[in-house]
Length: 263
Ligand SMILES: Cc1cc2nc3c(=O)[nH]c(=O)nc-3n(C[C@H](O)[C@H](O)[C@H](O)COP(=O)(O)O)c2cc1C
Image (cartoon, rainbow, N blue to C red; front, side):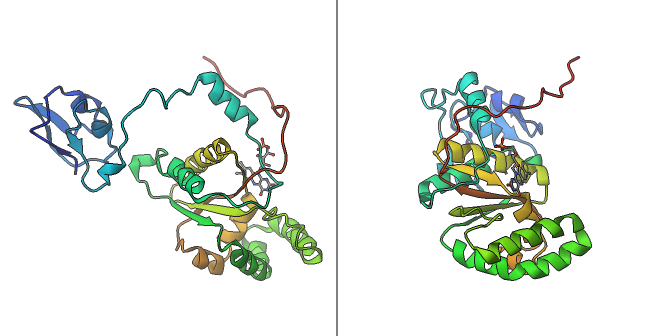
């Protein structure tokens, strides 16, 4: 439940006005919570005197808005979107822990339907060699499963497997990236939106990412890999490879015209 510190509250009603669930009213000059809500935290974010709180969350985590830090111009943002590239050539260097933590923060602060915040993020860097060993051991049984559920993947996966067996450096699943990041989510859009923000944060950290639909297919089809990743029955929303790019791009890649309808 949201709480309102009655001593601090000045009864301005801004929280009540911005509450999407109409869970707050102002009575006798003070904001009052009248029913439970999705805990979106708008009341906490909007209150001029820090009177609103959600005790279930770590309130120490709440940051004050700082216009100096938040100075992302529309041009800079679009530039970042345009110059982001899928990375398939990585340096060996692992990602620093604090960078990975900020990348996960970009995921956990992303909007989720009904504010469910139910995505699980699995970062595999220290134990990536172990994960890859199990992955390649599992691939033959993944192929059997895919034959039933998604036969179109069988031929390319077999080719990747044969290439990797000839030369383990020739790895079309992991591209020798130093880090693997999986997002599991009941709502695929929640997971996908978080993944997009995490990729952009990775770019801002000087790193880069590759979304891997192939890894997503393979992991989803392997109970052993899912167990190792500790995701239970949660659907895999996104698999990403992360690391520092060993390639520099000099210009944007061309794109089709926007299929946009203006009315
Ligand atoms: C959902 C999704 C799955 C993808 N899966 C793979 C993949 O399995 N292997 C791969 O090499 N690239 C994969 N990609 C990368 C796309 O091929 C890439 O985004 C596209 O070619 C455009 O290049 P860019 O990302 O550099 O703009 C995937 C991208 C998305 C969005």
